[in-house]
Image (cartoon, rainbow, N blue to C red):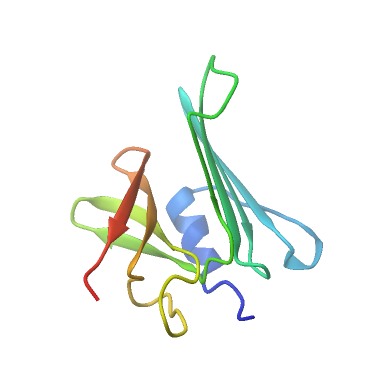
Amino acid sequence: MPEFSWEPLDFLDALGVIPIEEEDGISYSYQVDRSPLTVSLMIWPLAGDVELAVRCAGVSTPIVLLNLLNSPGARVVSAKDGKFIEFAAANMFSGRYDNTRPAPYGFRLWVEPELQVTTFSYDV
């Protein structure tokens, strides 16, 4: 199984936080605080698993909780309307994923201008 395709330094730049890395690169944990929201992003690159939780201050459960299993990868995109991380949906298209091109569909974590989670699809 191919590893998760990504550029960790791009994530550092986009999220503005240093990840907590588990020994031997098993997982990377990012936490972005933008009151009243907190985004927790966990990536297990060897398995291709991703977990995204968006929490709001004063609410005990996440307002958004997404899990991708066997995702082929993600890429950071700077567009005219903001910056986001685009996560490819898991094994739903043929071929090997290269994080320099868009995946056919998945979800985006917008970090600029505001925090937002959206789905996307491109014509293939």
